[in-house]
Image (cartoon, rainbow, N blue to C red; front, side, top):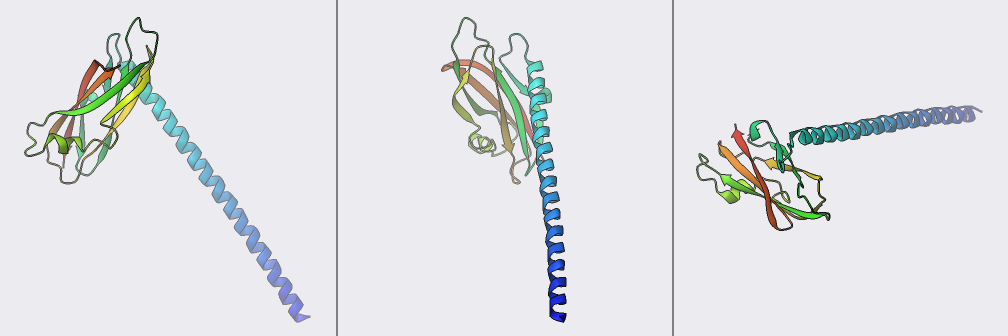
Length: 183
């Protein structure tokens, strides 16, 4: 009889433990889901607001805009920054979708010592220096973010990058932004 009582107490203890663990697991899953839901919502809101701010920058005849105050950003060595920019298709009399291509090049390295164009261009994230054939209907905009990743050993200077765009292989627009590397 003593063994049966001990076995029964152990079974009840085990069941209570399992119920408590399942409750904690469910509460944990609900918490994680709510965190990811709110994070996704926040990212979507930020994306919409950045697009709205970029749209405000377009004037009637402006084809490309870079979303940076004074076209300049300061980045510390070892850090990364995203430069938002957009191109708007203002071609008139065209009813079909054009193909947008862009290229980011280094246009000025004055004061950067022995830094080469190739090395400065390597600071721009992989796959973000150029692209081919993005469909861009008349009156529509294409939004891009170019990631600039400054290594720890980068010289302290200012690099000017230029964004050159083409529509259907014809020169279309160009703009620039400066990256000041700080310690």
